[in-house]
Image (cartoon, rainbow, N blue to C red):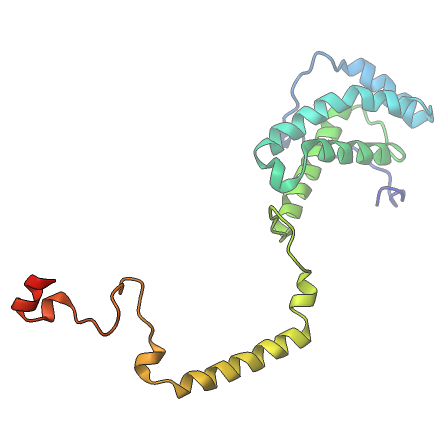
Length: 194
């Protein structure tokens, strides 16, 4: 819940060995640290400037993790936006401890990427090229299932009236009419005529 403040302040107790933070020349640590301090102090413009600085690196991170799975999971842009929303929500109760804020952001990004993969695992939709002629809920309603069951029972009863030969229609390989004997079973003098 992004709109609610957490019960305890967000702190940077992060296992930095698990996060690979790449050095980005565009992201000067001193500039980001200044923006974080200003945002925590209550400057209303600081979160916007901070996100403007962090967004390219977060987007690059998300695209790197989700690039091969973008169609199944959703766009990396959407995940990067969720990361930025979570960063803004965490700024409200963030405590400056002297550790890298970028590492904190990358941990949030890693969690959001993992959430996206989990969400794609739960997604059971099957996209199709065209729309069906009628909605599935009308076709598969209780009345339709009852009618289909009754039809299957009547059809089964009618099949029992047929002889065994009539119940087993010719297969695809049988192209000759059923009254025509096979060429190898005809007498040799009739085989020459055919």
